[in-house]
Structures are given as structure tokens and as C-alpha cells.
Length: 123
Length: 173
Image (tube, rainbow over all chains, first blue to last red; front, top):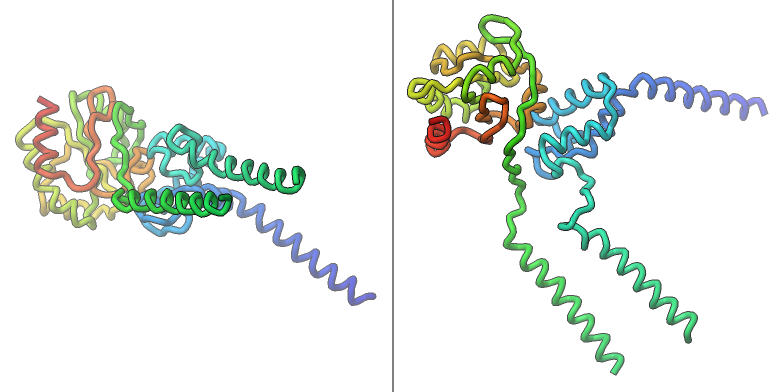
């Protein structure tokens, strides 16, 4: 019994200390989160978070400054979209060009559902 | 009959996929940045390389009809080849050329300008690259042609070519 309590105390101690650590690293984790959603424009196939290029390093610094100035995540995305175009974010906006891409899975899903419905309930 | 329709639809499906991928082969898949037009340059404050004085970008840009902001660095090889063209441009025209020294050491930057000549009316420094990012730049070298309202008329990514130079001369005349 004592042993179990000891283990529980030890584990909860670790959890609490990790939480403390994460609060201290709040800004840098926010920077990481945002930079993971940004495409590094000069290195193909990498995010800003992954890249160590000059472009990405400066970008991370800029994001950090903006967070410290109290800007929200969306404000930062909008700012960068305005500077570099929509390509910089990994999440594409809904527009005419990619309408098919958004709707096609939905069409497939619904028609599949209809097929199953017909097979199961009508027969 | 039902089987035939099934096979036909599978065949159609694969032809459809094949055509899409086949057409996709021709498309270049490298990213080209979009041309930025009719956008204002973001205001920034920076220190001058030689005098160590602080300048506001607006004051430098809006006192001249046209300004060319050139992002350069002494460690950047294409900047070296571009530099002669900037020298020519500064001699031939009265265009206000402003340098933005990207992530460089002060001594190296001064040495570079001593060796290659200084085409810049002012040389602002950008030690951690933040100003360049806030201007929407990708790296070095890069140049922005601006009018006296801080509006970006043209943006040149990479070293300036002779064609670019004649284009600039045509615009400012």
C-alpha cells in the first residue's frame, strides 16, 4: 500500500513540475505552434518550424516579437498572408479554385452512405 | 448487364485519374512568389551602418520621387555580382538607392563597400532579419522599387539583371 502511494506521489510530482515548465515555455511553445503551420517559402517541403534557414530563423523571431506585443495567432497569420500571400499557411482557404477539393470527399461520403442505405434497407 | 456497368465505371474512373495525373506532369511544381503590386511598404526604423543614427524609412523614401531598397549582405555571393549594376545605376541616374544590410557583421559590410564601391545614399542595418521579413522579402539579394508614397512599384527577387536595370531606368524617367 505504502509503495503505491509513493509511486502516485512521485508521478504527480513529475506531472506538476512539467506543467510548471510548460508555463515558463508558453511563448516559445506558441511560436512553435504557429511556425508549424507556416510553410518555409525558400526551402521546399519544410515548415518554418523545421527549417534552420535564415528566412525561417528570422520568421520565428518576428513571430515571437508579435506574440510579446500581444497579437493573437490569427492576427499573425493574417499579417503574414498579407505579406507573402496565402501560400505561406498550410491551411488553404475555401475558394473557387479548391471548391472541388473540399466538396468531393463530402459527395463521396454521401453517395457511399446512400449506397449502403439502399443495400441494407430496401432489399 | 450490371457487371458490365461495374467494369465500365471502374475503367472510366481509372482513365479519369490517369488523365489528371498525366496533365499534372506538365505543370511545374516549384513555387514562384506572386508579384506584389500596389502595396505599401511597411514603415520601419533602423540604424545607419556608418553614422549609427536611427532613421525612419518613411523619411528616407518619401523625400525622393523614386527609391530602390536593396537587401544585401557581404556574405552573399549573388550580391557581389549585382553590386556593379547598382554602382552603374547610382552613377547614371539620380535614383535614391537605399541599402538594407541583412544579417551582416559591421566590419565585413564596411569592407565590402570599400572594396566594391558604395552606391547607397543610406545603408540601414537589419542584424536579425526581422525588417526584411516584415517587408515581405525572401532572402538576399532582393530589391524593391518604391515611389514617393512608399508604394511598391516593382519587386525584384534575386540579383538584378541588366533587363531589370533598364526596366528601372524606364520607370523612373
